[in-house]
Image (tube, rainbow, N blue to C red; front, side):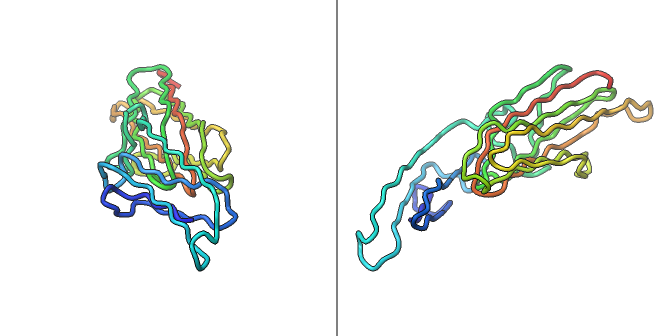
Length: 208
């Protein structure tokens, strides 16, 4: 079986295939940051193999899901470059929660967030996997917390269906000669035929 996601004109966007007797689900996903951006989509399902029609008979189920992407509570998909990284709106001290962030190994491979921290403030950041989709051991997500020079400060990963949170803590000291905020990045990368809904929990405190 061959599964093809196309735009309204028939141009292929994604493709995947099953071989008998495989019964694992396949994901064909497309996000608001995926290119191109068609106005409509088609799903083509083709049977292949054997020398005459009807030689292989089977059943399949197509499940179509549509939802608003809400990475970082932005209402859209987080960009995939550091230059266009999505700023997490951490206004003031306290706990900031961003639910229903989404990433897919067959669509938007990366989510990149920018975090700004004022002097003499600390940040406790947790990335929490909540809902996986896909076949076990066929997907994993990597978390990478970086400084403004894109140097990794801490990294971790989860394999489907692990939901262990990734956490990191940083403190930005106040220096008389340079009283500027610090910039950090959170890079979320997913691999394999899987997708993940996750949340970000950022607690900002004054002092350590």
